[in-house]
Every structure is written in C-alpha cells, then in structure tokens.
Length: 64
Image 1: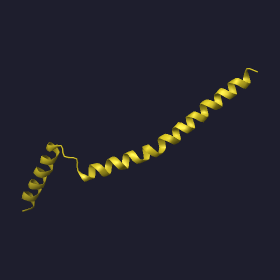
Image 2: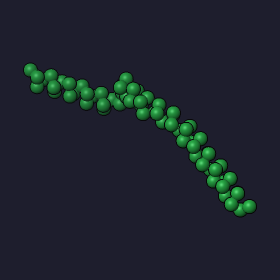
Image 3: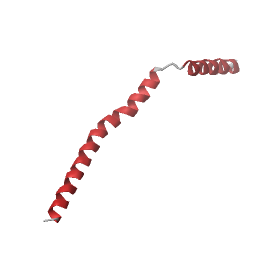
C-alpha cells in the first residue's frame, strides 16, 4: 500500500517538474532570497560612496 502511494507521489512531483510550473513555494523562496538583497544593496552603495569620498579627501590633503 505504501509503495503505491510513494510511486504515485513521485510520479506527480516528476510530472510537475517537467511541466515547468512556478509554484507557490518557488515564489516564497524567491522573495526570501531577494528581500535581503534589496535591503542590503543601498546600504552597501552608501558605504562605498563614503569610502570613495573619504579617500579622495585624504589624498587631497596629503598633496597640500
């Protein structure tokens, strides 16, 4: 009985993967991956901008 259930379940999941459907869990996974990236990216850009301006000012004062 359990063997038939497993085979049926395996066949269904294999069929879904072959069809290329975008499931609810795929959406949840994508959101969980992209949200932190969208939050961290602007912070990283601001940090890099401050570093660039800091180095420019430091190098400018060294030449005086």
